Picture 1: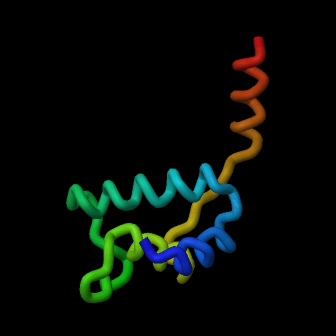
Picture 2: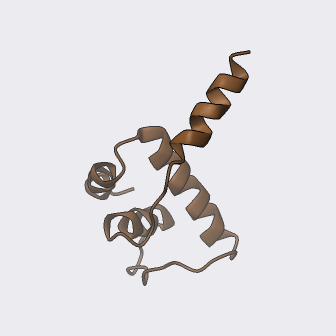
Length: 78
């Protein structure tokens, strides 16, 4: 893993658990041939680095539904 790419991706997605989930799910999609990479992998590049570049270049994003998250939090607190 290229730690420079990781730092740049972390700037785009500052929430570490969200970044970890995005990368792990996307790597599984690519490795299991569910979806192809959104960028052409560089020669010898690890899948994780390809995914980090997808995030850095804005090809892969995530949305957080805070209303749903709040509702789940209230429900689980009962």
